[in-house]
Amino acid sequence: MATPAAYDGLISHAGSLFWIQSGEGPDQLVTWTASDGVSLAAPQGFELGNEIHAYGGGAVTASASGVWGVSSKDGRIYRLTSDKAEPLTGHTGDQLGDLVVRGETVLALREGTNGDQLVDVDTSTGHVRVLLQSSSFLSSPRPGPGYVAWLSWDADHMPWDSTQLWVARYDDRSGGSLGTALLVAGGHSESVLEPQWGPDGSLYFMSDRTGWLNLYRWDGERTYAVAPMAADCAAAPWELGYRSYTPLENRKIAMRARRDLEDHLLLVDESGHSETFQLPFTAIKPYLCTIDNAVAMIAATPTTAPAVVLVERDGSYAVIAGQEPSQDEVRQPERHSADGIDFLLHPPIDAETTWRAPVIVRAHPGPTDEISLRRDPQLDFFTRHGFAVADVDYRGSTGHGRAFRSSLYGNWGSYDVEDCAAVARHLITLGITLAGEVFICGSSAGGYTALRAATTTGPFRAASARSPIIDPKRWEASVPRFQRAHATALATGATAVSSAAIECPVLLVHGLHDPITSAQDTAALASDLKTRGADHELLMLDTSSHTLAAPDLAAQVLDAELRFFRRMLDQSESAKRT
Image (cartoon, rainbow, N blue to C red):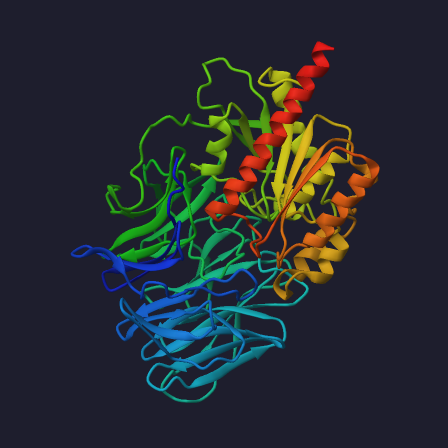
């Protein structure tokens, strides 16, 4: 199957949608209107994107005054049309993102070596004015009626652990500073995310003060729970610009809620009443927006990759970019639970009603990521070649509440490994696979999980680790500023992967110039394994990519993993015959 296009950063303005589309070539900024359909919103070849807070986000915004985007090449803000990119700001070496327009002003977050700044940029002159400065972290500048809201958090926390929501008076035309800041919500044990001003002037936000990330409304004096539920309604904000809800007319709000490994689109009102849209989509990215009182979103099904979708208030929908929901050769995944840990099992494509096959247990990255009930070309690759794949929401994953997510702090390399091993043993007990035919793989933090699993006596025949973390303490010292608190919390009590402790064959894959995890550590581990005479393989790729997700890189990685797993199966079969 050809690699489908990917869609991110969906926003809307005055009857138009904009999104970043990636595929075989460079990322493109695309726009859509009901009358004209899909077209480019920036010149062919303009490199849109940023690396603010290491992972970027909020690189484009639109208003009546134009479309504005950040160039990944020089970090400047440009005014964009389909055939022209005109620089608005000068080159400083800082990172800009989280863009939003207020009148003739672009508000943005700027990250420098000394911390974060909230700035506004005059779109007629390019003049940059600093509104607020912090040696720690800021995000989400959101202008409202006479005010601006923003988030802050200390350097020793992550935004999904502890943030504060502030508001202050702001007039983009005054040329002055912000008014006195007022704390609306948040604190040491509360994460507040995604502030947005509603049409009625209320300030909405997500908070996990009850243990679940739910929607709240502040009317200027008091805070109200909008739709309390035992479900997480926002994702861990690895990128800036996430929007897991969007206001509609008549004081209604559409929002994303995650239940039972599946994302649902809900329509809620101020009374707390909620209705679930009956849609085929089971995975929704946190980029909801409103266009002509319809909800625009990036969503996928178990058999189709993410698409850009418009959902009307009556529940009808239209796909405006990407694949229509359909049933094809891909089988629906099975939902399972083992020792209280949820996972999705994807059978081989040609499996009969009763089947047995080798299984690859996947530990997702993050580790605060979450498994997604959507079609995945890399997963398809293995199910087409006769493998089943088990995606595990191990402890530390998002989508199961604050306590579940934070339980991995101080237990990394332990709880996650136990959970993946429990899934493997469960599948062996069910007769779905055989002992000696279960593998574990993971990327980044998931790669550490896979390698730690390889150091324990357990159900895994072999392990594959992409861009893995080898030594949590050394990784803690080298990660980008944004991620350092997370690395510190995870590294507490975590043990470095030692070649002497590895008990099964491993495949190690890394990009030579990876800025997030150390390729040198991976190469050193491979060298130690070679010295020991241990069964291992090493694939080093000449790239700075951490995810190794580009089509050409992914193809090399998948082919290497397939050969490795098949070699393990051949060895097991030979051992049985002898």
